[in-house]
Image 1 (cartoon, rainbow, N blue to C red):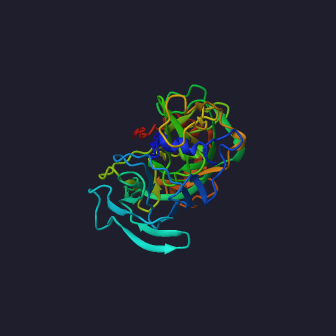
Image 2 (image 1 turned 90 degrees about the vertical axis):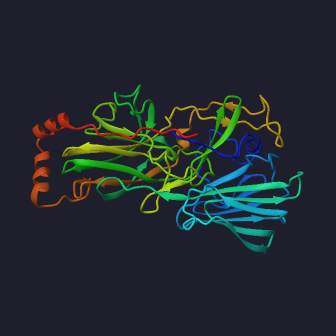
Image 3 (image 1 turned 135 degrees about the horizontal axis):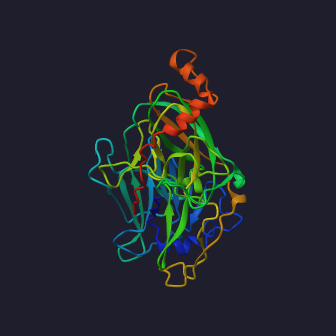
Length: 415
């Protein structure tokens, strides 16, 4: 699993903890955020991904006072999206710079545009992707600051073959569909423990390499509080880092030749937690050739498959009995908390609070080589013969013994 450390570190957590968002109670841990959202004092998320609008109340915003490693808000541009930030005060200085010089400057020209004043806002701006935007106003010796890092996305390659189909797979709300993996199966990537899940069935009619790539999840939010020694951090899941934590933010795929809910460790063909991709510009995020944002916690399962019937499971990295940290209100809202001022107490994740969760899956591979359940197979040629043959128990037994366990991409942890 990969989780990102948000730049709003301990000082901001002390603020967030006492806000309406900060303390995730057992009753509200998985509520889906609505907008506008008062994320913390001085910062309102007027609109989230893809067209971000941030409203900053200069009289309420608390700057952490650091000149290096500015306290910042980190967001990701997705094609078609935009960034606007509005301030209730006038600036002393406004600066911008490219986040990473390795990006194509013709595609991602960094910078901003002033929109002037309107209503309660003295200054408003649009910010280009691939831009660090620094708005300085009165206060500290070198000014109070509000900093945005608006990262760009660059394209990654399509999987092998053609895109055969796209389908949404859902996990029912309320934790009503749970499977127990126990200590897990023999595959290195196999999950363990109890997890909520959803299933999709398909038939392979022509052997070859197939890829099952997650290109989006719903609800698309969120962040969560995690601890690192004596420190607490707000970690986020791009591209929408605001809202309560929902487990589908970090999905997981398991492929079966024959799924048995009472024995989920049997007949596993392959599994994958996180995608791997390589981006030349270290400060950029990824999108696919269809302009879907691709978070590297999304799964991409690759397997060499022979003709037969299969079941693909969508589940989550977090177990349903996983310990989820709950942030207690800090004693100080204006300084870095010392030991004891931030408390992370364990709590069992409330299944009853889980909303319906889903992921959009793309199926890639041999053209015409895979058919989803409920989709008619071709009525001519070898496809029809394979379909009819698969009804025979003898051939199914043979196929179950000759399934090739495909290459699965391993997690690539990122700080």
